[in-house]
Length: 189
Image (tube, rainbow, N blue to C red; front, side, top):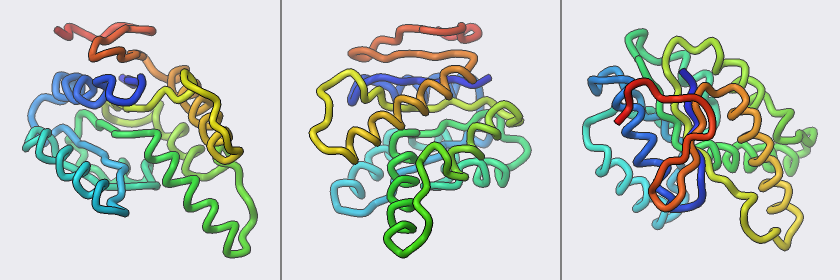
C-alpha cells in the first residue's frame, strides 16, 4: 500500500503518518522511519532531535537525504512499512545538489528529470513494503516573489500529483484533522 499524507505546515501530517505507519507495520523492528532532513544549522539540529525524541523507539531510523530508492533497497527483508518524512525536504535536498552540480560546471538538470526523482517513482509500485509519505502542500498560499521559489513550488506540486496518482490512499491534513481524498485505510481508527 502507498499512502500520501499532505497538507500545510504544522497541520499534523507527520504525527498522523506515524500513526498510519505503526498501524501498518506493527512492531518497531518492522517499521522504518526514512528521514530526509539534514542538520545544516542549529535550528535544524534541534528540529531533528525533537522528531527523534517524539518517535521514541517505535521505528528504526534510516537517514537518507537524497537516494531514497537505494536506501529502501538496503532495508532488512522483514521491513513491513517505510515512513518517509518528508518529500518536500527531500526535493529541496535534490534541488540543492543539482544546483551545486551546475555551479561546478556540470550540465543543468531539471528536478523532474533527476535520477533521484525517476528512481523513487519507479521504485514505489514494486516496493516489498507499505510506504507512507509526508509532503507539504505548497500551492495554497501566496505566489513566491522570486523565480527559484516559484520553480520549487511548481516542482513540489507536480511531485505531489505524481505521488498521489500512484498512491492507494491520499490524506489531506487540516488543523490536525485528516480528510481522505483517495482510497481507504484498512481498519484504521
